[in-house]
Image 1 (cartoon, rainbow, N blue to C red):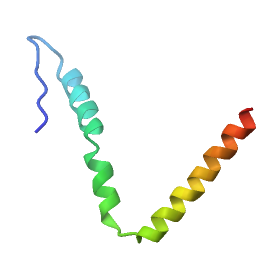
Image 2: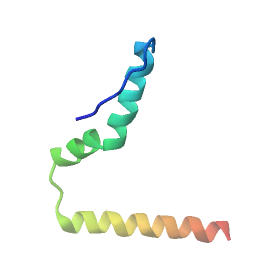
Image 3: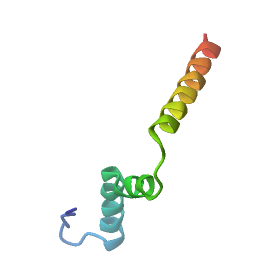
Length: 63
């Protein structure tokens, strides 16, 4: 449960902004979206390899 302590006289919009920031950091929405569709482990590995190659090419281009 996310708790946002309010100081006396603090603006509601500011408290809502704090709540949203804490909620984003928990990663709940990201996890729910990830779980909506199942992807096979082989597909996940392939995506990771493609990403690793992409990152490696970026690092080589910097040098």
